[in-house]
Image 1 (tube, rainbow, N blue to C red):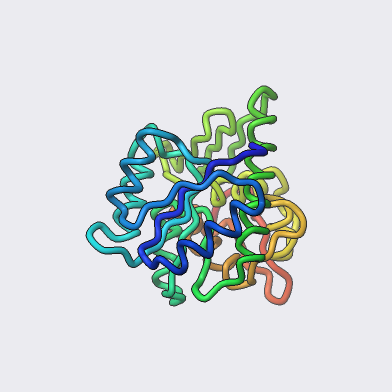
Image 2 (cartoon, rainbow, N blue to C red):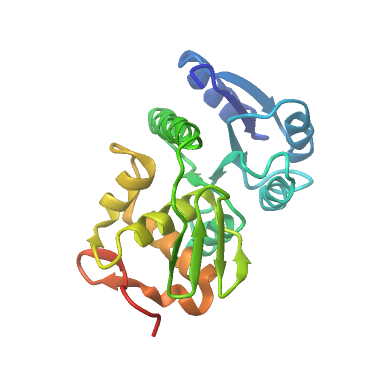
Length: 235
């Protein structure tokens, strides 16, 4: 993971080169594609650790590319960062619902981009180290979560969650009744020092609740503080 492989799918040459320069300076290996089609083809030959995916691309757009990445067994587990000039909640929610792990809004700071990639790679190392350790399945309010299989079901129906959504749900279910601030939630699933806005956390929680359906209400908003997982049965 020290020499992580990062795929940059970006059609604007200046932005592509800016990202590449900053990542290579950090010691990462970078693959570049200016269309989603080329990027998907490259992923078939070499699996990257992280994909930086522009949303507005010629041909197949970023949303369709993300859908294809998540629907393929070979690439479903790859971390994908949306890179987009669209900052509307609807666009961000759509990306997260398709399985994006993070989003970067244009224009962005290269230093912040590198920091977020570094944080995600640390998290991937933790996940890799945890694979050999047995983790107990969790069950509450009609929700069943199996960490080893990385599976979640609601009332017996499998639910597809992004990596971040899964980690948030596991943290909530492991600490029922406790109230957590947005920053505490991010520290728990991404590691301390990860830069993210309150709105980004709210969007993730919104997407998670929606996917949990009738059980989504067990994740309560505590006004002025944060969120908690309600103890006991679902209302």
